[in-house]
Length: 326
Image (tube, rainbow, N blue to C red; front, side, top):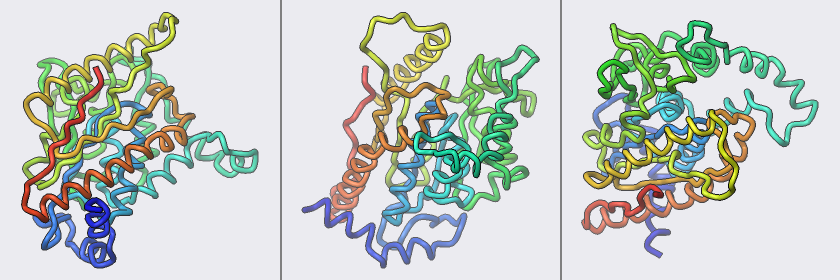
């Protein structure tokens, strides 16, 4: 089959050997002599955004190293950790160490008790009235070894998207302090405290650009966008709680903006993991998110195979026809 031939190309030992030999932070980063550069955009979506980790694990298995990453909100968190040099499997292990899993027994909980206590403590309440929680503690745990890191130090170039609260304009970070940019990108209004940086009051980038694939196009031959915010519950007659209504309204807005954006430009590959039954801060369902993401990961393999096959035949890139659900 055509797809299998293409997948053999990206998973062959010679491909992976060349990929690992590429110099870090160079203009040819992630680009092999006869292969395209891959850029990946990771969207926001709370805990559902942990599906990005499964996607990154798939790219690792295929021997594909992105030449650039762009992320919004949870996509910025996962993207920054991956761009710092961690593998997809290392990110999965990091998350599992700080979450209570359904498969955990008493021995497991005892062994990870220190991490669990730190994680719970990381969700510090904010008494300033600017948000319910302060994200500093959470990110200090996840970015423990990257407290003073900058964009310039990342092995893979990274773009982080936030929004200027006062002007309503999109703000992108490509240089300077990494952690404050990520805090700004994930500052969901009403939940996390806004980030003040260079005189700007910054909030979650999802309100302006929840799937920033437009920021990787100039440095990639093939653009992969992963959208995790489009799935909503359409069944049942229960009236949502105030929290569910606020989160759902934000999701409706993000999906509407993305549909409009896709009318004007599209990524080469659009992946939309169908993550259902998981709330925005439902960290107890980490394994469920990763499991539900597997179908999308299989689709990603097929789509990459199709793109490489068409490029090999000089037919040009494949534009995904998938669109967010209405």
